[in-house]
Length: 131
Image (tube, rainbow, N blue to C red; front, side):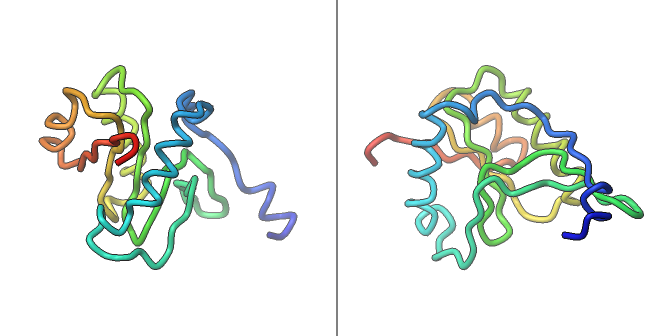
């Protein structure tokens, strides 16, 4: 990246305190190990902390990160969900910048939120430890 490009790149990242937990890391490792089963095929490319960009005429800004991206599918990992609305809002915000390209999948421990996500056309995958 050229120096002029660096100064034109801005960061406006949503804060996700879940990212700094060891439980989040465990779910990420489980997700990566189970991607073929979840996607129905072996992914060709897997990226942790995939940047979501706002592209402007002469610069770009990172507005957030998908926890994992694999073959055009975005994954948001949560070790716990305090509010389905909060997660849905985060994903809708990111969708604004991705142009709706690629589906979103929430991966979290089982709970009452799975049906809510599915009704909002956000796939839910229940993380089951040691599964």
